[in-house]
Amino acid sequence: VTPKALLNNPVSLVSNEMNTLAKNIVTLIGSGHPLLNRISGYYFEAEGKKVRPMLVLLLSRALSQIPLEERDRIKIDYTDVPEDPVYSKVQHSRLFENVPASISPLHILHGIKPLNPLTKGPEPLPQEFDRARGILPKQRRLAEIVEMIHTASLLHDDVIDHSDTRRGRPSGNIAFTNKMAVLAGDFMLGRATVAISRLRNPEVVELVSNSIANLVEGEFMQLKNTAIDADHTTFNNGTQHIPPPPTKFELTEHEYRVPTSSTTNGTQLSHDQLVDMAFDYYLHKTYLKTAALISKSCRAAAVLSGVRDPIIEECYEFGKNLGICFQLVDDMLDFTISAKDLGKPAGADLELGIATAPVLFAWREDPSLGPLIKRNFSNPGDVEAAALAVKKYDGVGKTNELAKDYCNKALQNLRNGLPNSDARSALEFLTNSVLTRRK
Ligand code: FPP
Ligand code: MG
Ligand code: MG
Image (cartoon, rainbow, N blue to C red; front, side, top):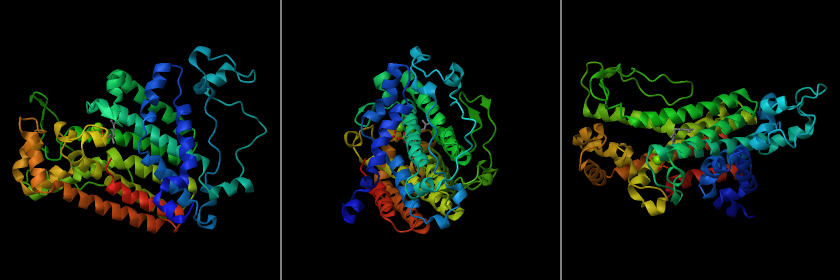
């Protein structure tokens, strides 16, 4: 393959890994129930973009180009992924059949592999250490886990959004009912959790687990536009009082920080200040809902490769900037691309009452949009009026510019953190194509 061909096709660099990815995921989500298997596998049958695992694999490959002398040798996690627990491979109905006599039912139930008392922990043998020069086994598993978490969140998202299509087919909730789609998402998340814990790397376990919580936090923030609803003292029927919003978000390390909203206490905010706050809220939501999974899996890939802290930070920032860019483009496409081309409902955000970047840009120019946003476009004609304002004030073009800024920051992170290599070029290509994607 010529370098040029590689550059134009980042997938080809990790195509072997991408092929085993699909196969391994099928094993990881196998259950004893045929219908559950069918639903869990449903979104994997249609070709998704698989951006997340591709990023993890390409980044892992790019990190492997960093000389071993520049990494913490102790921290390079080159060991194999432990075998899956026996019980997850055995059909419920035949739980105790065909199991080697050396394994007791207790081992099956607890997923414990019989230990050889003579074997100590893994020793860094030279030939194993050689592996650190390529994509590590645990980085491959990480790519699979990330795709599983993402797919689980899509099953739930389509229930929440009342979607009827995904990847050009009926969505899970339509094909199988809400209840089964939710349960399949939960199941997949459960299996992803098993796989995460079997990475046997506490820092990575913490990172990836956190990103699951972040998905839910982001989705929750989206339910209510509380940034412009800052005095929301009423609840449901307007009779029940709830405490005012916190003056600042309680965030864990490495999170996108939102400025405090303490200025709301008694002070009248100007229109621009209000819009600024809404943008902060929106970007923070976007980080949690979309960028957290990407950025934390990039960080996890870097942790596994044993690189030093400044490189880990660049990888994390890369994922964060790319993730925000990705969602900005998603929110833009919701206004510009037909449902047929998207393979999922278009124009859905306004219908769902969600104000995304294109609307916020229009609101900055036209303050009269505020009440519409506040009531989640629930009055007749609100959706149409907002769509018209987005057109009039070029909300889409402005969102595109913002997405470009994040794309450029992500490219800079790549150049700061990684040596020049085919994988880094492929990552740059992938980053640019997030911006120009039409799907
Ligand atoms: C797609 O957004 C949805 C997400 C990025 C995250 C959804 C997260 C949840 C539903 C929380 C539950 C999480 C887990 C892990 C089970 P979108 O609706 O804007 O995009 P779409 O147009 O593709 O539907
Ligand atoms: Mg959706
Ligand atoms: Mg959604």
